[in-house]
Length: 101
Length: 317
Image 1 (cartoon, each protein chain N blue to C red):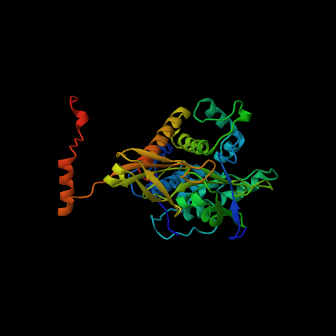
Image 2 (image 1 turned 60 degrees about the horizontal axis):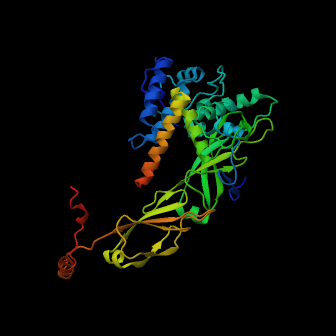
Image 3 (image 1 turned 90 degrees about the horizontal axis):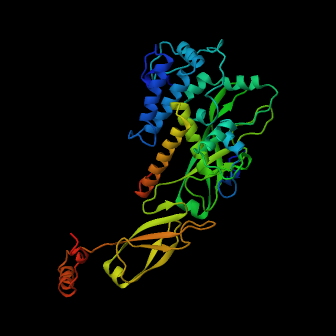
């Protein structure tokens, strides 16, 4: 790879979404972890059956944060999801107030 | 390379048990969490705390650290003796992927061997490389027009002797037009190398915008508080508004507009499919009555207009 090479990526949400396996790989977790969190309502999946599930940028970010909370604090999935919901709300309100997130 | 006192970072004695280390780590993780911490250097402290915990929470690493660091003080120049780690078989945890990239050279020097060991143990089985994650901060104009930006990433690198060191990798990345804050750009094959000929992982870049002085960004929509003169609000006016990419849009302020009213200019937010909208919240700004002429104008209005801004309050205490 040279410093001059220009990399064009894929924009998640629009050009592509992640499958259950891709999300698990991106977060360094087992597919089962993703399944449990979708079934617990902690992650939102587009699609009905697990093999049809698709995930975008927000769910990837949420899944990584959730995994860190569970690892660092041994948080239950529901509690980790609640913390992230509150963080998202905080970020939204800060943005509304014109402050840097 | 400076010696890092991981016990001091976590605030525990060298005799601390695993429970005490975990308890202190959690306390500090909460204290320095970047989303809630008021500490000015919270992000840096959080990285140090994570690194210290990665070293001390793993019995193998802790034993090795204790052995090689005996007698050193925090910040003291440190050089591990050759083959100091002979006799330790590291499991490979905590020195992989994005987390390792945040750790110090000191950590890499001490625990860098494990990457090679792990590769050796994997043997002939191909394992796809880990996905890496990074943030990229761009200007609003980059999302507006699309751009190419150079980013530098710290990445673990496998040396010829099997050791893993931290290196810097520079990438030129095309920023697609219309990208939103928080959106991920996936660069296929730019993550960790695969093992035994397997595919490399991907690199995910999370897009953030530089702080904006005037505009607030929501998806592709732009929001702006637009100051207007009283006569512009009362009589109507056309005003020109400079947009982040350097272009401008002319907007008609309707006659009789009031402070707080929001005007929507369709399709004039960040370009994309679909493009965002521009929302203008009007804020009527009064000129000061400093000069005699300005005072006369205000006095004339007060006398001739019979205007009561609190008329609606009458009968409604």
